[in-house]
View 1 (tube, rainbow over the protein chains, first blue to last red):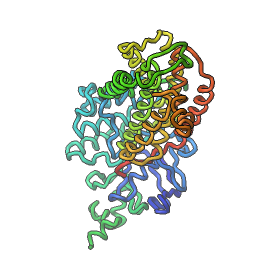
View 2 (cartoon, rainbow over the protein chains, first blue to last red):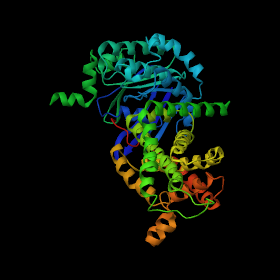
View 3 (spheres, helix red, strand yellow):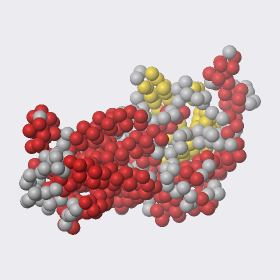
View 4 (spheres, rainbow over the protein chains, first blue to last red):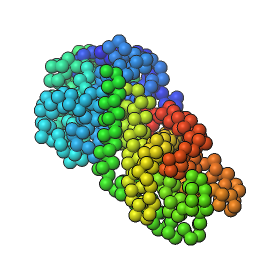
Length: 243
Length: 263
């Protein structure tokens, strides 16, 4: 579980995130917001790449700022920007990541085996990442994020740039994994067709949480039936649409 | 158990640096061609003009090639240090630095591992250059390779940390190339790498003092003595604390969020 309390983030007095109070429980959480809402900044703060201007972040009760190393061991991340080493093979990329978590190459390969099989990557293990297409690279990043067996998985616009089929394959795989491994997953996106009614939805707009709850409950509360209507209602996209 | 995690991380970082180095074929080639050109072309052209008298640590008259060999070794270390920093700026811009920073191990340790891994790679390059230098009759005993090892590692760490410190001060890859021109060439030419400082003193006193206080001169002199199985106490006393200070400053000034694209 992740708990964010009174967290703000400013860059040169410009508020990027403003007084965030939100919790992400075990299960599939969607962080929804338009471009520029602050999703990637929130992911950077959750991964300790930036420090909040005020407030706290707790992972299973452990303060990220006070004990960052304990928290980092529990987190797996797929960043929006590709972060694989193109000159290395898939196996070498996984081994490198594992080593940074103190896991031997042998153990990495044992942990990776079911993940690689589940994502159809077993036969690409010795290929250089440079030789893989975008969809395969994303899958490798997903395997890498899971290879140290984290309890929390953060995915920042992980499906952007992929074709519809690859996008849905990855999403479906993560949903299965979330249930099977009892993970806490945060799926940051701006794509509405990636949201299920049962998902815990956090809507972010201009650096603020504008809605938080189960997707179906939020739709009922706002008297709408479609996710796109809810989105328009809650975010500036609605105002833009009106113009 | 805890030590094992740290060791595994170092091995992982070192393996990655080696693999990247091998994948970038031209890097090793240019690391060796550059000093060999100096040694074969430049040194042959200037040997007549720049006679070297008997001086420490050499016990007798030496050829100009022999004189500039430690300086050229340091040139390899300088380029390697700056190039490894360039790759850190690249990693930071391309996002792969995030993988390193997401490790549960202390960032200071991870950055030091990167510096040490690059220092070991630089050591191998220097050894290869010294072997090639035999072609132009710069012959060193095998003991020289052993006695020079600690000096080479310290110099490589110092120059790598200096590069990291510089890379922390700039925002983008494009700026880094400019900074290099204002760092590599002045450091190299304003040192005792190519000419003894007493010659510089005869030509210009103020240039002599700049050369004298240039830390690269200290690097060159430390290695020059080490290659002849001798210790240069003054150079050690300057370079060791300086290396520690620069390493600490480089690690402390490192900002993970700097220069990231696309956010």
